[in-house]
Amino acid sequence: MTLPRQAALPDSYADLDESALRERLAARKAELADRLLILCHHYQQEAVFAHADVTGDSLKLARAAASARDRRFIVFCGVHFMAESADILTAADQVVILPDLRAGCSMADMAGHEEMAEAWQELLGAVGQGVRLTPLTYVNSSARLKALVGQRGGSVCTSSNAERVLTWGLARGDKVFFFPDEHLGRNSAAALGIPDDEVVLWQRGRPLGGNPVAALKKAKVILWNGCCSVHMQFKAEHVRQWRAKEPDIRVIVHPECRREVVRAADLYGSTERIIQAIRESPPGSKWAIGTEINLVNRLARLYPDKASHSLSPFQCLCSTMYRIKPAYLLWVLDNLAAGRIVNRITVDQETAAQAKIALDRMLEI
Image 1: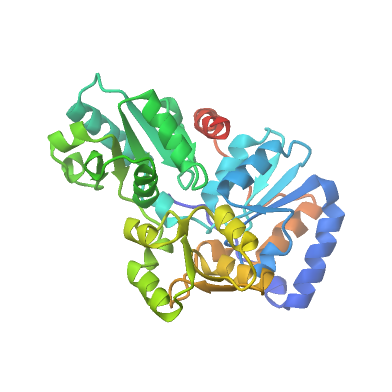
Image 2 (image 1 turned 180 degrees about the horizontal axis):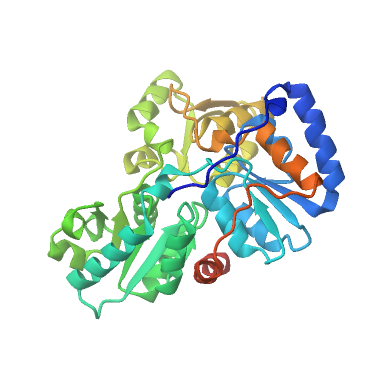
């Protein structure tokens, strides 16, 4: 995906200290009042997260955008594909804004619209036109890819509902083609009891995804080989190291982690599920958490009676999410207060209509 060009921030914003940013952001929020809704993903840095009206994972924020009919301006503190989904799910007179247009997603970039369309035709040719093939795409994908999935009878999913959506997809057809995160797809298939030899990986750029025809015909789930750069940093060895150091520690990881990491953990789930597990655990609990560092640090602050640590010894930061900074948030709000709209995210009508079909299916499932 080629992201739009981000305008340079005026020097006056770069000179503001944290206190001034907080005060001016609070003032702008009060001024815009019920015309404004700020949505914020759990991976945002604390200085942005503190100004959110609604926080959550992709599924919760998609629902919040879809139901916010009374808000004129929706500022999405997340990444580009999330803001696209919000634009698709909101009314035509609502405005969706991304504070920094450079906030993209490397996973979404791994599954281009043209690539997927070509692979779809190639796969159908290999398994036979009579085979019922259902496409599913993780919400971490472009609007154009969601539209293609909608056109072909498929659905979007999130990490919260991937197993339910995969069950739905398999009930509709003989096979599912799952985009773009192979690890979420593989972990979801394993949770449903699908044998490993009925799950194959489609490797981008290789004929038939690098698979023999017989394997594709046998498979129930074909996985696109995309991944999350953050969750790929967690390893099964990290789980073993924590268990050796703290025998009573519990390990919870995100399903974007490799299968061997999920298998070694005590629990796995979406960011909402991770938060719930820590919140509801008894005082004195010890946790090693396999997800983005901003959320891990926030859990440690929110629940000081529990010990929350990153599973990895390294700082696993989502660098694209980190592009949303308080100064950029203030800049877009200042422009709104002055009657100007900057960094608006729009999806063309035809793409939006097809993508909405896939998103609505997800919300229904």
